Structures are given as structure tokens and as C-alpha cells.
Amino acid sequence: MLLGVAVGVGVSAVVLGWNHPTVSAERPLNMYFSVPGRLTFVVPIGTTVAAGDVVARLDDSALSAAVRQAEVNVAVAEAKAAELQAVAAEQNLLSRTAMREATNDQNALFKKDRQTLRTVLATMATTTQNAVAHTNALFINATSSNPVLLVPADALSAAAAESGRTSVTANVDNLVALENSVSASSTSADLIATAQNATADIAEIQLFLESLHFLEQQASTSAATSTAQLDLWQQKIATARTGIDTLIYSILSAQDALTYDTQMPQASSSAVVLDNHLASHEAAAARALASAKSVASSTLAALAKLTLHAPAAGSIAAPAAPARLPSIGQLVTAGQPIISLLPKP
Image (cartoon, rainbow, N blue to C red; front, side, top):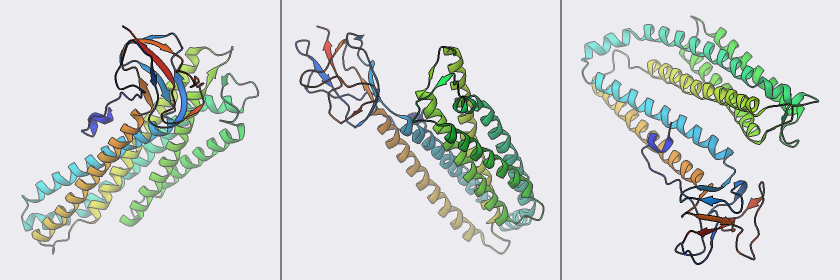
């Protein structure tokens, strides 16, 4: 999803710096970032660019992961707020008698929630196993004495790869064990604890897949590997990450359903007390949603600052002296000239 749309905010994707207030054809325009970072891309000297073209980029791996997590947080907050609003609208139509009947149905709801949790846990284990299979080529490559995918030596060692795979396998085993632990004798507290445990497993798996994504971005092909093969591995990592992101929402939804159904008012609770209870949770959900959107907006704004765009059409030149052209992988400071733009007359 496009986060700027999802959270209801607009964030400009054009971030650039210059040492002159206006673009002039008579003099070059030094361009720089407003934040420090590691340079991952810069257009070659002599390139002709149009207004708005990307001319340089800083490493955005960490912020990209934060943006995806912010998207998940907003989606979860929106779902929870919508659920509470729907419940409040429904409960306003119920009489005290209907409320008493609803309370009597609590055991049936709990049974349904228990089965839903088992289904979610089974899906989580299967999806994670598929994710490991999708990324298996990277594991094999990292531990091979003759790798076909070239990864910087300091980025991924054989020991680190094997440790990561062992950790993910342990997470899968725990998800299977959690599914098997859900039984008719499980209490609501047991099930909520099970869901929380599973959420922690998925978070660890997601973090590991993010690290694989980072490494994949640094990878290159050897003479024995085609670009198509590298593209295929990239697609498999993206598929695995998407599946895990979806599972986070599923397990949190199951956990919320368990919590809400467990806390349903008993027959002795009055309609007024129930309404106050729901109003309080609705307000808390609204605050949580606003906070999630705010974090998402600021994260996306920070990500946008890592891309430098041409303010006008022209040709790219080295930065004006005494500045020097930085190289890929170099750490640059805020305000450090990266390149110059010679605007078209």
C-alpha cells in the first residue's frame, strides 16, 4: 500500500539542497542531502536529467523496514478502531435482555476464538516454512565454498547464515508446539499468552527476513549466475516478507478477539456501564490510530529525505571546488555537496 495515502497524509518525495536560492543557467547548482547517510547511488557525471529525476540516494534499508512496520501498525489500529465502532453501534440497539443473552453466548464465542487461533497458528507455521524454502538459495550460497551469489564478506558469514536458519527453524517448531498446546481445557489467559508468544516468534522471523533483504540488496552476480537468477531470488525474498507481514495482522486480530470476548460484560452489568466501557475503548483506539498515523507520516517523511531529485533539467557535473565527488558507499554529511547541476539555458 502507498503509506502516504493509507494514513491520509501527503509527503513530498522531492528532497534536494543547493547553495543558490534560484536555478540559473549561468552558474552550476551544487546539490546536497539535508541529512547524513551512506551514499548508495549517484548519476554519472555528464548525464542529462529532467526536472524531478533521481540523481542520488542514501541507504534506506532501515527506514524502508520502519515504513513497512508503520503500515502494519496503521492497518491494525484502523481494524481495531473499526471493530470497536461496529460493536458500539450494535450494542446501542441491544436491550438489557439482549445483553444477557449475548453474555450467555460467551462460551460459544470463546470456542470459536479458540479454533480460529489454532487455524492462525497452523497457517503461521506453514507460511514460515515456505518463507524459509524461498530463501534457501541464500543460505546454501552463504555456506558454499564456491558461491554463485556474491555478498560482501563482512555482511554475511557462513556461521551467521547457519545461525539464522537454526533460529528460524526454532521459531517454526515453537509455532507448531503452540498450535498443539491449544485444547478444550485451555483458559482464555492461556490462549492470549499463546497468541503473544506466537507474535514474538513472527517478529523474530520478520527481522531475519529483513536482514536477508538488506543482504540481497548488496548482492551481485558472478560469472556463473545470470541476472535473471538474481532477480528470481529477489522475488522470493519479497514474497516471503509479504507473507510474514500478513501473519502479524492475523495473529494480532486473533489476540484482540480473544481479549474482547473474554472481557464481555456479564448479565448483571447494566447497559449504561457497558456503553461507558465501549466509549472508553473507542477513544483509546482513536488515539492509538492517530499516533500510528503520525509515526507513519514522520517515518515516510524521513525516508523521502534519502532521495535527491533534480530541481530542473540539465546535465550533471562534479561538485564545484573545493568539494570532491563522493563515491558509492561513502558516508556523507548533511549539506555536503554531492554533484552539480548545469541547468539548460
